[in-house]
Length: 561
Image (cartoon, rainbow, N blue to C red):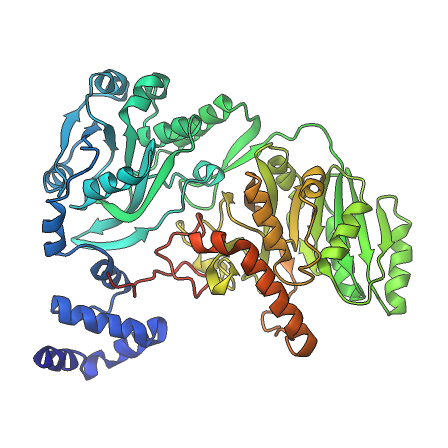
């Protein structure tokens, strides 16, 4: 052991010193410690985040040998089926540690149905494209099935280019709106054979992106969809081919089968990302509830931006709460002259955001409610339509927005449960030039929560769920409400095509001294007590391989198996 440590110290020499300092800055001393442990285990220094993660989270040669002795209690059997098998894929299949499978190659997508009707295996493994499996792929699939009655299973993947693994794709659990915005399922899919035999229409007239097509069709018939949060295959090209027109056609057919009317499907920011514009039914009234205390400049900017909206059937309900400036009341008088703006007054001695918005909703007349902070400036003129098209769907409870700081960095792109202790704003302070096609920051997606600084909800649903909990006067009230909506089996939608500035200061500190500290502690304890089981399970829309101490999707490479 001493000799190995001496070799390690020799390896981290002066010429590597700059790289080591940078590594510590990005990953901390804990990360360097993990790298040192890996050197002792594997004999080399790797100042590479993903290589460290692989060493810490994937089985070594000894573990792979143990996997070969694994006996499935269900004696599970599999059949690989594809229209294409490259040499790397074929060799990787033969190297699997779990060997109870057959391999079949078919000539076209139209032969899937006939082949599967003949199969006597428990599960079908569909593969497509230029990929290679990790040696433990079938073993992990079998283990997953042992504990769950899964109908469909997919997994994470990375790329293998010039012999080097890179760009891990750590995916969310199955999310209906996310999968329609970007095909994150990929090129490996496992499906229960009996389910395919019963629902043989799933395999008829498949598109070119066959796995994507099958996944959407199965999602129409079952919720038993499992996500294995391990890298089970590698893409062998730097850029996998994406047939955009074929994927759009697959999405259109899915929407038609689901009886979801839409106007069009637009291309997103990156290739393979899509934006569905659903049809709005009727002309429902929308009430925009804005709590306010003074800060006329902010409020005026907010109101002026709302008045630029393309949707016309709305009212603005300003909830006046303990303002003191004469200028504020003079502005209120001007606003009250407009037919669609009204001022309602709530006099309470202590600030209680939940009570204020509840009062605003009580005094609203719209079918849909938008909660909006007074320091929001709307960018998207069609923002109401973009929210309404989702909230009109019976499976959606809330639609939220993408908010920027004044410098155009991200203030809010949804909420992840579990980050920074309890909940954190995704991608906070990320700049636009840092966006990546796998960040999901620019696509409509399902999330666990969004901020009430700007979100829409059906008024009846708000009433049914008793609105915001007034025991949570300041902290966690919007996340608490979102979790109530999810518990009631409704989806939360984050829509990045609803854009606005939120003039909350990046450097704004929280005054949590004295009475405010006591209040925060009380609200913290209430939230944790209520949602501890949900927090403990982890956020289904945030892969467990990411760290929880940051709002950015950074790999949790320090985990040691």
